[in-house]
Image 1 (spheres, rainbow, N blue to C red):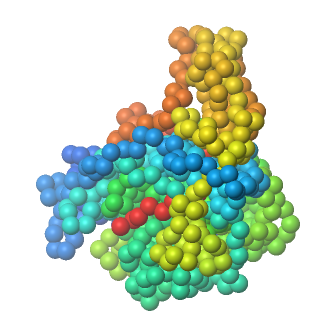
Image 2: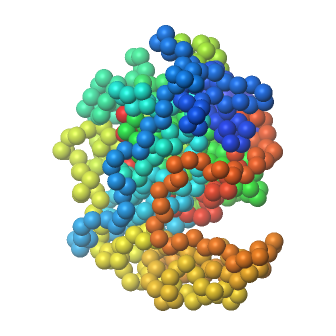
Image 3: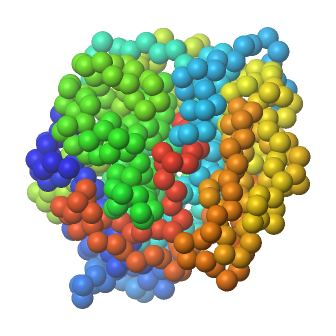
Length: 565
């Protein structure tokens, strides 16, 4: 990555691979994204896994707020999981619609969905005639958040509790409605779409963000998209219009859980892979190993914006297609001036968003020392949506902006056309009544040097997006995943292990994934040395054994809009 370059209108000193984040405590870091002064902003209890970190012999300190000096004895406890039961069935309700014809190209292609969606957070994804509809639990799944490391996490209003790992639940679920036809505004300004919002105060439902007198045309308490792992994407600003790192409120992957609980959502670029060769797993959602043409290539798709545009990752090189040609606008996107397609065949001359990193300076306040510089990363839509929301008949962006009956609601946008051929469904989610027989596969028998598969009994019906693995004999390992995509089965085999195991290789269950553990992994992998793509800073993330590469596997799409209130 080149130093001193910027992809957008904000200045950047340093590297395009900077994150402004520290590795989690478990890996010897401070465990947050934000300025150095956040080391003196702790409020949670060390006895519960929170509290100040100690790094290199230096220990952080508790904050003083409102005249109160917090300490190990006056700290604030983590909020427990809510009483609402977790969702146990992700099968869509209702019958399919025989009057609509499914769109099957572009983002609607089952092949595209199977390639980009990762993890187990997205439960199903399909297009009808006007919308891409994604149902997700919001679980990060491909990485483990370190929420207890956050110095000053969000607090539940009216209480002294702070959100953390114990707060996580899958009681809510998230549905994204991504319009397939979009008309863009001619302007790129914070005031884009401001008149669509029902509320003009800068806080609460149906209001846009306001920082003082500055308007940002994004929802103040809802998401702006969904990442490819099914996590909600929120603005890089908190609901008070301030950069979230400045408030010391996000973990090493720019996550936190809002006051309403549920799953963690993103307030910054979830970039954290330290090894561009891909020999070690990602540490957040994606990294250099996910760039199909290397770091000088165009960044990968990492999410879907709620207004109907794709979100790509950050640029890592000035040689990459479209870098500063033109610069990203204040909405956080651009249309390439030169012709060219991305790895999926989509024209890059169509408007799209990118994440980016840039410099920021602390204002006055209790968390961040006034004048201190730090790095901020965006999540795609930066200060506005580019699409003219009024030109869509409905979208997740409109659901967050207005309660007007002039636009379609969830029931209309979420319909399923009968006999779908292109879709994605997680194992255990039943779309059998809605899909064409040609889109299904038959579970294979045990491969050579194997004892079976996690697909179920040979001959069991599999649906597009279903994956499983062979169970191999001692000394043999699965070559990958067996996957059904649009009626075509790609079957994994059992091959000799590089380092043979004394026992048969374990295989994942084909049933829906359980809720995440309430605490981080107790045995984190060691932190590797930084690669050339990220060696310019010492604030990188851990190496998590739970990570799956974004571009190599597949599963996640656009965001439903969970509240950050």
